[in-house]
Amino acid sequence: MIRKVKGTYDILPDEIKKWHHIEEVMRNVAKLFNFEEIRTPMFEASELFHRSVGETTDIVKKETYDFADRGNRMNTLRPEGTASIVRSVIENKLYTNPSLPLKLYYYGPMFRYERPQKGRQRQFHQFGAEIVGCDSPLVDAEVINFAATYLKALKIDDIFIRINSLGDQESKQRYQKALLEYLKPNMDHLCPDCNRRYEENPLRVLDCKVDKENPVLQNAPKPLDYLTDSAKYHFEQVIIALDAIGLKYEIDKNLVRGLDYYTHTVFEIDSDLESLGAQSTLVGGGRYDNLYASLEGPDLPAVGFAFGVERLILALESIEYPIADNFIHCFFINIGDAFQTDALEIINDLRHGGLIVDYDFFNKSLKSQFKQADRMNPIFYLIYGEEEAKRHIINVKRQDSKDQVEVELDNLYQYLVNSLSGGGCSGGCGSCDGC
Ligand code: AMP
Image (cartoon, rainbow, N blue to C red; front, side):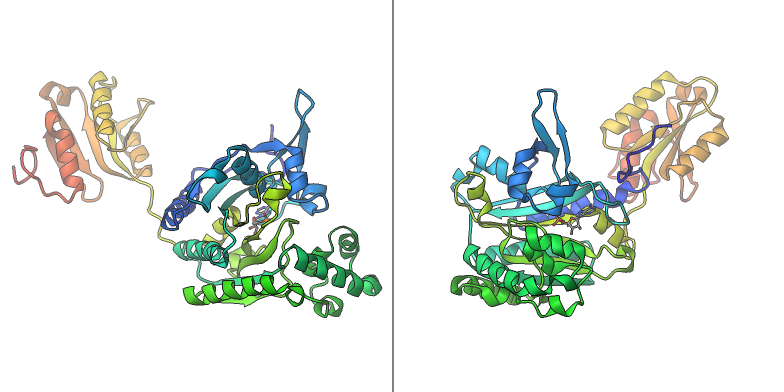
């Protein structure tokens, strides 16, 4: 038997309701904040990710799915969404839109060759948003607010917003120099991963999970202490805006995030819901003011975030959640050996009128048809056979009360619609008590 590839999984019909819910709330909240959806390809030229995410990041060094196509071009399955959005905005000249900033959101599968575990897969989904073309601190706050509002709309209330600032390019360089000087004599006390990062991407030493409590890291210089005056002002304004919105946050001086391209504000939102286990970060994001220019685009400042959708699904497991049960309006039950061909027309007319209708294809016994119907949770059974066809009627039985009435075929649709809207007949169905 061929099995699914390690780190991938199927979303089966039983689980899809939660996914639809998460997607529906995402679109509704995006609308409230006036973001528009953008869809980009699932694979891109490898160079895009090498140059944006960064050659020295774990993602590019160890986690990308790279392949040569039949024309020997190197392609990569997207490991994240931002790089593709940047490419698309530049290539399609979306920045010429007179009403900048662009407010975009995306949703879809991402691919990383990681060690699979709960909340960490090789194919996973992200919902992300980006505001492009505005350097106002209000934009940083808007993006954080969007993420927090989405969680609130999903009823995920136990959240912790952590924010930090890496500052502009000058602040980052100043800080990196100070950090390297501080760490150099202390590297023997840190883990092998930290030693590798020290050489390749020193900022990431700061958010090492292994040495989190190590005094070397606790006492290391922090990015906030190396901000230029304008970077400091930017961060203060972000905080003023978050306070005005009333969002609760914590300044986490060690937060740096994994990707090379961040500048100024970075943030993560965690939750301590039990079902999340060790993977408690639901969303991460930040400002990236230099990425557009570094990919030969115009100098466009931008801020964004990405939610891990599998983690949202996990989070929902801990919450009493009223997601409506599946149901259908009608199950059509055929009496007798032969299926009445005009039944297909009846079923089709009801569907065209917007009713959910299903029926048995196997020519099962009456009892089995009722059993099958009950698994689908119908509001009505429609019972029809040779006798009914002759008299041009159909039997309509409610599943809840088991009440059964004969309805003229020509009045069937009207009767069902009237009953569904509370039973009040507006007249003319010919079959209800009032008519
Ligand atoms: P990142 O793009 O690494 O900043 O990740 C953003 C969010 O995506 C994280 O906070 C996670 O919720 C989610 N995420 C990242 N990698 C994975 C993965 N391998 N499996 C599931 N979710 C992931």
